[in-house]
Length: 471
Ligand SMILES: *Cc1c(COP(=O)(O)O)cnc(C)c1O
Image (spheres, protein in one colour):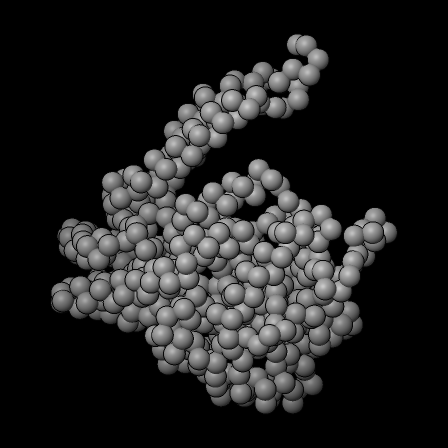
């Protein structure tokens, strides 16, 4: 090998870089353009993938053509597609190509999005994009936040900031936080990671419609206060993952005010519905929150990873997270220049804002609003199709793109067998959940590529599967 050879410098010639890059783009375009014609669900058993992929790292390079072919066949092949128009499980991630290319640009330029002096342009775009989301959520000027990996990290970041505001670095052993039993589990993990004991987290039973009861919240906080504990934080859901239910945010805001609680709204899944008139009405009161989580990698159509946390008073982030060790002092700058490394857990951080910014620049907010509205309508179409057959009972009606239901003549086990059979079939993918102690099938229809026919045909196929499984 000669000095400075391509292998040793880990470089390709400009022509080879282009050839590799174009091939990658072709692969992604084939994936996206071919989605409708392929199964939604897929995978292989561990043993089979061990056989295909287990090996020592190759001592000699193999050339990118054959490596890419393996990636296509053995890595990206055996999986379900969360961007597939008939992927209705969990919360899909119907990402878009502009967002994907933005991520490619970010990987290529590799900005260090933690410090203004190193990446000023990216920091300004993040400020602007976060501010668009602030306006979407109705928070006042002065509110702010940052991009994080996803909703889990957004919830954790908000909880850490709220705790610091109340307790500083002092004793929080009597602190109590509240959420409903429909809240996303990430808040429980955040509490554990942040060192709260299990008994410091009150999981309140949801009331009617699987919504957190404001009166129940206030009573719980009063009882804790009377017992000498220090209630400080409540999380409401702007769209639960289970049913799309929105907690009564305006009333909860009043309860939080009276009880002296920081109000966090988990809008990881549902907050973008505020783009539509219908969603805005449902989410009334979200603008009263002290902090809000969003997940642009769900209903704002971005590739993983993209979460956002917003704080009514953005200074609370800096108070909670800022550290200035000696080796970072010369990048600690003027007040109006933001070092996002001071606002969250990550020092080195990727430039996640670009994908949402570019998506909005290229397609416009109106197109995103229409895409969200379409997702809401599709769940209504699914509900209509379900109601048209006596085989089904609706558990929760279509809300924010989620409908839950049961095969009326079956027990819990049958509901799960229906889902498993559809998974084996691969045509569509859905998931089950448990509501009021009973299994329910669940469709989440937030992919703008999904057609009404996709949804109706899925319901019809489910019914055939259900009858076959019921024997
Ligand atoms: C998905 C989700 C989360 C967790 O977000 P991740 O991006 O998966 O970390 C939190 N809350 C709600 C309501 C969610 O739907």
